[in-house]
Amino acid sequence: MSLNPHPTLLAYHSIGLLLDWGPISEQSRQTKEGDDMKGLKKKLWMKLPRPAKNVLKTARAVVKDINSRKLRAELFGGDECFVPKLVQMRDGPQDYHVFKASGLSHFETLKKSGLSPDSTVLDVGCGIGRKTLPLLHYLSQEARYDGIDTDAESVLWLKRRIEPRFPNFHFSDVSVHNGKYNAGATVSAANYRFPFDDGIYDFVIADAIFTNMLGDETRNYIHEMARVLKPGGRLLSSYFLTDSQTSTLIREGRSAVPLLHPLGVCLVAEKDHPNEAVGIDADFVFRCHSEVGLNIVERGFGTWSGRADQGNYLDVIVASKPMGVKEGNLE
Ligand SMILES: C[S@@+](CC[C@H](N)C(=O)[O-])C[C@H]1O[C@@H](n2cnc3c(N)ncnc32)[C@H](O)[C@@H]1O
Image (cartoon, rainbow, N blue to C red; front, side, top):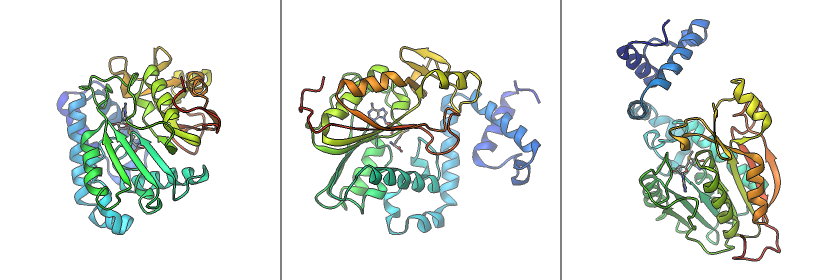
């Protein structure tokens, strides 16, 4: 089958792929023919312009939402009102099972790292609240949760839904530039100061945000996260960490993310849209931690690079701030 198809064919297959109708039947998915078709459709999808992809993603989510009412109620029960619709999950998998599982698995990691019901938590890049949901009934009235994100729409939704019922949960829209998520903002993430005092959080989490941030932006955010952590507090963050082994896997096409273009300390998937997917040199990230006195206590390889075959998709770093680090003097 030609891989330079007529635009009409391209649109037809892409719509079919997204809306889950069209030439891939459940039966053909299991066969070699189904695999070929999936490969072709993936290539067609890559060729679509970004606005067309967004329209198709939205259309699929709307259709899935209409069919998922019962599932939502089954999965989330009385907490359903704190769960966004699939159409609001503009980023990441548009899937209620994944939404629930991803929040729960992150929650388990936090508990293993010492989260208690009275902990103070900052969620940097909280998105549409995947990691928030399991904390709603876990954190006590004495605890505090802050979520910040550049996505004003998601933040507003979380504010309206969660803050009135859980007054110790707060969400803020931060108007910081990100080429993928907030291209119109002028404040650079490389200089941004979080709107929080020094040393107030037991936990800072930053999941799947550095995969869309460049070197100097990541460095400043690690410094800021260290600043707002209490001595003894923990930072949990995730990345596409690159080193010689991942570079080989990427070149051999064994990584899920084609980070082929060097950009400073980063490797990016799209030269013209660097924030779309960013891998970052592992040694650089370790240095950013040590510059502000953070000790890395755990590091897990993700499956994204093809290095690990199970576990988290992203590479995860857990770091702790020593008890002796002086507040406000981290750089
Ligand atoms: C891939 S999503 C991850 C969301 C959430 N952490 C999760 O795990 O579901 C990345 C999020 O980071 C946010 N983001 C990107 N750059 C940011 C920045 N400089 N400051 C705060 N949030 C940012 C985006 O708006 C987006 O919601």
